[in-house]
Structure formats: structure tokens, C-alpha cells
Length: 391
Image (cartoon, rainbow, N blue to C red; front, side, top):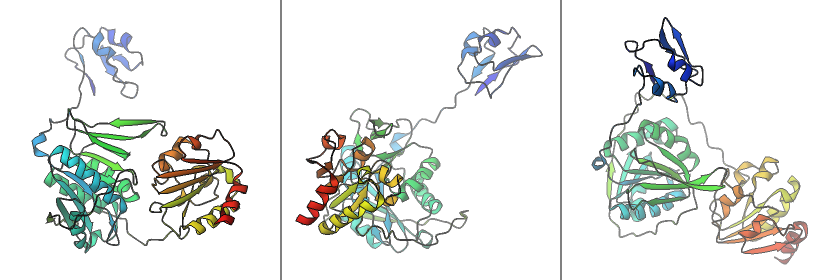
């Protein structure tokens, strides 16, 4: 904030001339600042020979880094089954924990979910923090945020990671606010800085045109959400031993007007897009909604999931849950077939980690061919029926 010290102001008017934003006026021979116009540029402070104008900066308390220990992952579960991204977080979390020479913790929230704690230990967790409460039976932002916030305030982890899922994106920002720390969303890479020991968080920026590496050196814990299918999952070891810590959280005074009503299953996806080994996606080249029937027929032959580019979804040719890309799902199938997709960088961000990419496009210069392992230059309305016939 900026402040005029009345006892020092002599009404010379130099600050008025120095202000480029007409934010200062003289009233009864004293300077007054219009905060709606002031940009805190500091020009008036420099111009004042009487030190009558000061800018107060609100700092933060120095971090006692010795209080913080451990790398935590949020072990998202639904219907008492761990989300697939949890295994990737455990794999990356263990790697980071070894570099930091600390423990890997997993936070498990839900109702009657304690058996999952053993599975988390088998996949790499050293400690599992369990909050088993009827209030956590179904996911709601505020109850989950309170549980994780109170656990973090009690145990002071250095790093907290979550999947960039609907659940993670919904409540993790609330936790970051409550802990007065930063949050890097939608990360595709995490590493430990060898010099500072801090977390290097890499994510797409500017529409996926660059990859930005972000650090939060002045606040702990460091928090990030991570894309699914961009990191290698942990390997199960049934001989591992770990510690299960059961905590109780009081929700009695939680002011939450939201209620869980029901879960409506997406019947348009016969095979889960994010878990499929074989994905066939269509883009603008399909020309109209009805032509997705071609891909569905091919997908049925190959036991594959059907995906789509943003252009196809925006044209309402197929529902949003099928969208692959930066604003859709990130997938990592064994084989990905892009049909009539040009290959915009936003789409590539969601599928370029696929083991093997096949592109079908009549434009030989389409960007999709730059990432494809096999490219078929031709009319999809001739190529796809030929593939179906061959199969």
C-alpha cells in the first residue's frame, strides 16, 4: 500500500507533477492519493525530497524449512478403488522422495476405505494417512479440503501432489489457499532442483506453445497437480512395509450447503478413454457427425476407445468426454490412430506420449505426421473402410 505521511508533507506539489496517472491531488496543501488510479509505480516516492510518501510492502514470514518433511500424494479413490493416476503419483513421488532423502506419504480420504492403505504401501508409500469418515463417503470440495488442510497443518509435508483430475482440480486449490502457498496446475514433469532442493514443476503454457518450469521458493508446502498418463506408474511389491496413521477430523462446524445427489455414468464411452490400450480419434476431416460411425465401427473391430479433437467436439459431432488434448483428456495408449486430425499443438499435448502413433490424413504437410510413427496420406473415407474390410 502507499501512504502520505501528513507530518512530513509540505505541500510543494512535486509529487503531483511526477505522477503519470493523475492519481495525486493537493487538498489543503497536503497530497492525497486516489487509489483507483494509483499503480504503485513509485515515481512520487522518488520525487519527494521530504520522505513524505512511502510504499509499504507486505512480506511473508521466513520459512523454517526444518519443520517440513516428506512428500505427500493425494490417493484419490472412488467406490473404494484407487484412481489410475495415483499409481503414477506413487512412482514419481518415490523417485522425488529418494532424491530428497525423505519419506513418501499418501493421504487416503473416504468412508470404509482402510483396506486401500495396504495397497498404497505395496506400491511405494512409506506412510499412509487415513481419514475414514461418513462425511467423506462421496466427494465434496469443502469436506475434502478441510481434511487435507488439517493433516498438512499438523504434519507439515514439504511437497503435496495430486492428480489433475476433476476431483483434484476441484479441491486442491482450496487447500493451497488455506495453507497460504502456491499451486502449479496440470504438470507434465516434476524434478528436484539439485542446488536449492526445491520442486521444479513443468507444465504447458500459452496454449501449449511453450513448456514453463515453475518454482515456488518462498512458500511451503510446494503443491502441484499432475496430468494422468505422463509418468510411469509404480511397481507393486507385496513385501513392502509401511506405517498406517489414522486421523480423526471434526466436520461438525463445516458450513457446506452443497449435497451429493447422484453419479450419472457416461454411456457414450463403452471403453474408458484414459485406460484404453487402443484409441481411434477423429477430427475436422470427418466433415460431419454421422461419419463418426466409421470410427466406431473400426473401434469395435479393434476393441478400441473412440476419441476426438477439440474441433470435432466444438462442432457437436461427439460428446466432450471423448476430447483428447490440452483442454480434454491426456492419454497414453499403446496405439493411437488419428483420423482426419491436423495435429494442432493443443491436441498433441494430450496424445503424444502414446507408444505408437498412426496418422491418416489427405494433407501430406499436416503437423500430425511430425509425431506419427506411421503416416498414411490418403482420403480417410477410402482408407478407413478398407481397414474395416481387411479386419
